[in-house]
Structure formats: structure tokens, C-alpha cells
Image (cartoon, rainbow over the protein chains, first blue to last red):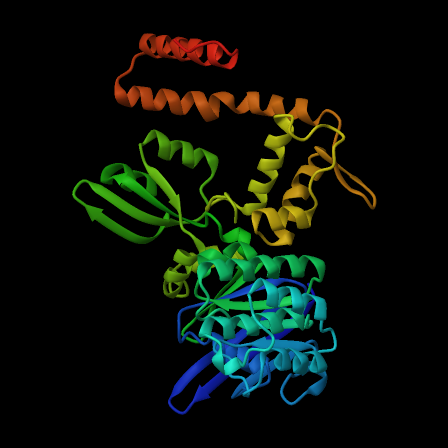
Length: 301
Length: 132
């Protein structure tokens, strides 16, 4: 694979706090990657360093083959849309024009159709826009720039579910037309999950999982039913979580279940419900310490 | 992710949906199948995932690539898919049915009677007659 972004041994410290701790990650060129993790996990710090807006304490970062910090050649080929982006006191149309001068691949037709999709009026002052509309403006600029590397950091503050769906649809459509490297950080994992070709999960400043998104589907399953049957079925399997209520039990097992195991679960009267990507991320803190970590790493290869 | 479920890889589900459409005759042999980007937009999934689903069927010989035009349903694809489904019929439908029947204490005589009765209703329905 060709990497558009390479991060090796990256650490970022603030006074008494470690925001990123020895992070190494490769983002494949031309893919859509999800950057997932809880608030405060280090997602924004990582994106800011990739965008050259912050410096590593140690380690190395390369975007499109070179360190991004103060590197005009790289920065013009990448786009960073942050959560709650601040704008100067200008109108929507002026912001779009300014962006069109800066980004060499700017697509004016795409910008027009996106502003229409989001109902953004060019002569409106940005400071009069609602929070959601300001987010929409960031998304329009982020997509229309058609930068070789596009970083979206939770770009939809204040956008409702309908507008977010517009964002996902337009992102996919434009990516299909013009494939490029897109890294999207989000905590709305389930609604964005199908967009991703791969995912990187960060927990407390460390990368705990790097995998092909599709390979994570069904990697963990909630098995529930009569406690005796649940125990019988899960014996010898890696288990993350065990709950019991009276004679009923519910257990999260790790590892793909083959057809024979599924048939056996059915005959034992057990319900199998796969964990969603979001639920997998919730369990992220259990990964590094547990023996199943090795099991999951194999999945990502 | 329009109508796809959690738990099984998406590319497998895309392949399954296409295979079902071919088996049901919705996609005729020799007909062009939707492109990667069309599938991605329809199911709201990553185009690479959609491509993997198509390739699964192509590797199986159910689809064939015509250079520069796209993917088409191969000759004989429908018959092969129907044969596969027949093979899986017992495993997928009959065994779970028997498991549940056992759990409910329905014996084989009662089960056969029920199936016969349902069969009468369904077949008279599908022939445009009135259900009894």
C-alpha cells in the first residue's frame, strides 16, 4: 500500500499531560479512513499535527511524503476542516472565493451545488449563520477544495441528522468521482461506519486498533439466553463482558463465529447480536491489556 | 448503509444481494450489473467495499467483465445460484424449523400437517385464487 500519511513514534506532551503517546499509523492513499475514539482520546491533537498546526514533542510525521509543518508545498495539497472552525467577519461567498484562490484543485461547480444542498446563501454574513450552517460551510469548503489529503475533525457540530446524511452522501459521491485520501474523525460512529474503508481507534493517546472496517463486522458478538446455555456456548472463547439477570445471561464474545457455531447457538436457543463498530470502540480500553488484542490485530492485517 | 445488517462483512452482503437478484431473475443473464459507484451510492457504503462484493461474484464466475463497459451477468449464473440455494435449503430452513418445533413440542405428524395446510393457502394465493 502507498501511504498518504505516515506517523512514526509520535508523542505530544502538554506540561503534565501526554496527549499522544508513541503513535504510529499509516493511512493508505486514496482511502476513506475513520479516526475513532472518545472525547479527549487525542484525535484532534493528531489531526492538528498532521495539518501542521501543532508540533510533535517527538517522533515523525509525513504527509504526501514530507513533514507538513510550515511546508507550503504540502499544505496547499491538504485540507483541514475542524470542529467549530472560526472565520473572519466576511460573507459566505467571500469565504468560498478566498478558498478557491488557495486550493489548486478547487471545483467551483461542486461548491455551488453543495451550497445549494445545504441552503447556504452566498451573501449572508458568516457571523449571522447558525452553528450548523457554519459547519455546513466548512464541509462545502472541505469537499470543493478536492485536496489530495482531506482531514475532517467532527465537521458537523449543530447539523441535524438530515444534513449529516447529505454530507455523507455528497462525500461518497464526490469521492467516487475523484478518489483521494480522506481522514474523518467522528464520535457518531454507527452512522458513518459504512463510509470507511479502514478505521484507526485511539484511546488515551494510543492507537489501540488499526483495521479494515469491513473485517471488524462480526468480530465480537453478544450471546444471550439461558445462563447455562450461554456458559456452555462461550466456554473456551475470549469474553469481554458478562452479565446475568436471574437465569438469563448476556456475554460478549470476541472472534468471528463460523456457520457451525451459529447453528449450535440456534439449537441452544441463544440469541446472537453482533457488536456495532460503535460498541467495539466503547470496549476499546479493554483491547491492549487483554489476550484478545492479538486476535484483533490479526484481523487488521 | 441502506438496509444492510451489522455483523457480516458489507462486501459479502452486497454480493449476496446481487446473487439473489440474479437468482430471482431481476438481473437477467447478459445484463449489466450496477457499477461500483452506483452500488456505493445506493447502499451508502465505501466504493472499495462495493467493489469487493462485485469481485467476489466475478471470481466465482457469476459475473464477467467486459472491458471498458462494466460487469455483466454470466451465462448459466442463474442456474448455478439456484442449485446452490437448493443445497443450502435444508441447513438454512428445515433444520431451524425442526429445532423450534422440538422446543415447542410439535411432533412430526403435526408439523407435516401444518406445512401441508400452509402450502395449500400459499399456492392457491399465488395462483390468484382465494385463500381458504
